[in-house]
Amino acid sequence: MKLTGIGFLLFFIFFVFPIGAEPAVIDEPVLDSNEEITNYEITLDEPIQNEYENEVIANAEPIDDDFDLNDDSFFFEAPPIIIEAPPFLGTRSFNDIFPNLTRMQRAAVNSSVGLRYTFQKAENPILKPAADSGIELLGSVMSKNPSHIVEALILLPYNRGRELDMLDIYNALGRIKNIKDYPFFHNGRNIFIFTDSTRLESARNRMPIPDPLPAEFIPYSDTMFLRFTDAGIGDVFIRGDISASLYGITYNLTNFRDVRYSFIPIIRAERVSVIIYLEPVKEGILVYNMSGFFLPGLVANSANLPININARITTLLNWITDSLRMQ
Image 1 (cartoon, helix red, strand yellow):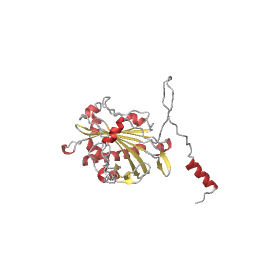
Image 2: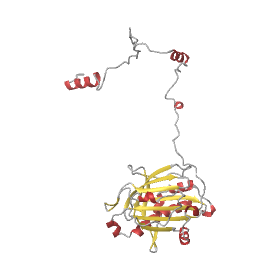
Image 3: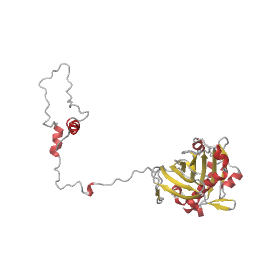
Image 4: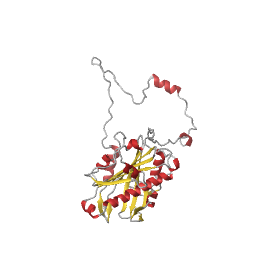
């Protein structure tokens, strides 16, 4: 095979004299200042071994000629590393967590729809967990600088006396597919807010995947990617982060893409914050929600925000409470 001038040059550069190649350097021994180097010579053809290495080689077992690295019995499959949630501290009462509710507020919390309250960022919430409860949702919501906030609280009694545990709650949150089946009741009729809901492979690969089978344990944290098809807006892409604490589970939803209406972004990515905290208490399942949205003034003034926001929060809460009843 002939080499052209350029080909010969490339052959010389890459194979005869590699880029960055330097002559090998052999470290010389460090001697005392009074010593002299005499007849110092290194022979690379003979291996250097000490007495310990000679003993190891002498006592080594002979290699089996029949040994086959392709033998399946030589390999094993390590189980996946999964970090489970820490042990929970026990069951608290509802009054321990929300001790300052009025009689009317308690009645609303125990109703089928629960207690709802909508306010703007300059106003204050009415639902305040006890300072030592370890529950603090408002700060996370307000960190996204929302223009409108919704809070909700429901106490779901146990079905026929069966107490649900944290694993029941975690598995209830995993059934995403049937969110579309829950309507919002308004003006005497049922309105289906979501026409479709599905899990996605990831934020980049938005291929629909089925809901997983019920889990046998609770992971310390979990992240899922979802797509809700809103009847009035279109596709909304949501990231759901689930985290376990000493008493309950927090489900944090936010939009990882812009929410658009007719190709016009109305809510920028990461500006929706829907946080749902669930805890099994002595009286039932406590479902506490704090949600924040940032909407530009033009959009906010042209829509009936309290009804529109409440419809979507109600749909999500109905899905969760009904999923818990199915456990």
